[in-house]
Image (cartoon, rainbow, N blue to C red; front, side, top):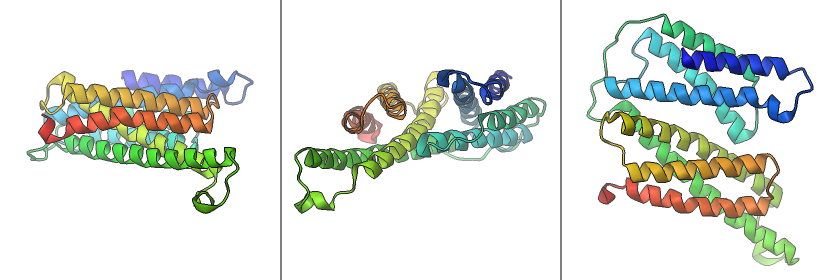
Length: 258
């Protein structure tokens, strides 16, 4: 019910300011409520799946919650990755209805038998994808900085002539980092729920802390770039620095580090 209430606030907020002359910061309030509600819903679904050793789709309520979670997740993914924003009030309203109806349904389904909980598999997969995206962005950032340096020194021939232009490199970098934030956020939420609830004992606190630091740094860097507060070169250098805690978290995730 708390998630449904947050989605309701997000829908009402976005509907109120969508046709007005409100400040841009006020206009984005509905989007932040949508993100908050999605994070809380992710934590709730993760806790349910980890405690019952099942994917949260084996009941009518779980299926509705998963549909609402997926709808909000896709909208957030498109916004972070491609800067393509779906109507926030529509997404929030649909998710709110799904969550509200799910709270009125009940019934237990059959858990999937597995030695490794399904959501832990999702946690591992999201983590691997997030780190792959962060490495890809680091390589993209290196190319951007090389091209930026070449243009500053007026070097246009040789290897520099083979490098892509700065504008597409900057756009690709924002897309890669947005996707990494989305995937790493999913991984951190599931890992945090497992760690704090002591459901499986799978979580590694130092790894989780470094992953959270990476997530916070990446989200802040992406936010500053989307707002135009930093330039493309600063964004590229920041992407390289973010790789350090990410690699440390990845090393702590290896079985040999436990």
